[in-house]
Length: 426
Image 1 (cartoon, one colour):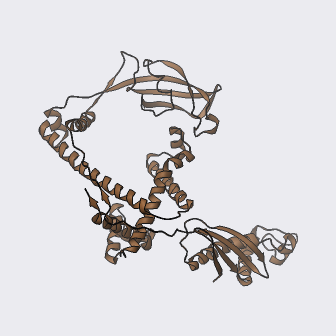
Image 2 (spheres, one colour):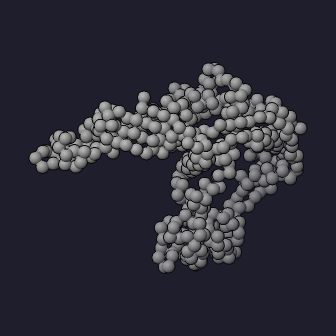
Image 3 (spheres, rainbow, N blue to C red):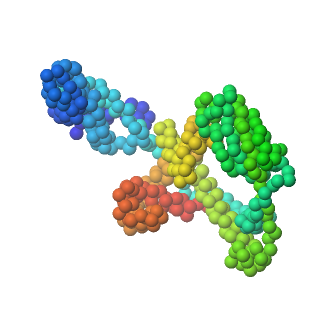
């Protein structure tokens, strides 16, 4: 292999010395030439027919060096990392230190690795479990949701718009008298007071009647996504086309019969109370688990590289994009509507990302200390569970989910159970 040395140069950081032989480099040069020659034309030769030596003599001996290194990069660097047995947590920084036909290529790859972890005292953690009492008010709030499902939409034509009303508007925004991109819509439905638009927009619709056309003045937030609109004053032309409000019916036996499996309000409320109590129990269990996780994180001792936090934060942003996609919303559009920037979203995720990284490291270490094993049957069951969840064939799931990574996830899950079983819950 091409890995010549592995040197620990800092906490969680190693330098890999990689040497590529002249023979391997020559092979890559020839591949680079064959790929590029079809686009090269020299006097006396048809396009794509110029010999390599003539091209190198014309453009320099190193004309194919960069392309050749790019051909070698992935297999050589990844092969060296595999050989080093280091568990890296970020893309390596690669520097070509020497390159020639005679000597081949010498590369220095700097990698950040998963930290060494210490943890103790994770058995017998004491936590308090508190189950919230379900009150009549809680039951009534749930019953109100049934009323909302049966609500009627009433057109308002005898008064001006108020906070809480739903309005249908056409609007167009102008900055310095010029319409800007993304500032126009027709038949847009908006609940006044929802905070869907930038501050001041919805408040200035209040007090106007259906059929009115008017202008409102707003100022975009300093942290607004669109650069040219940051902190800028703007004028929106509004056409208030309609105002409506929701009217909730009374909760009675007839509504319950029509909308649920129950015959009376009392039966319905009894079922609501039962489900709320079950949910209160589940929440209490989840709170206990989170309290245990917090204690486990406190017990963790490790110098964690920032790259691991950054990776998890970026994953969370990607997960946000995936949640938005089924709604037909891009991340850029989401940022524009919410007045956020990518940096502000990442900052909001940062604390949660740190907790998740620390917890995962702690649980993996405990799994190792406790010799938690995952059987083939358990792994197969987890694959099947994923297949059932996403309505996929088992072989499909196995084709894009690595068995080793899934085994780690199952081991971590079993470790959580181990910690819970050993906990002292008051």
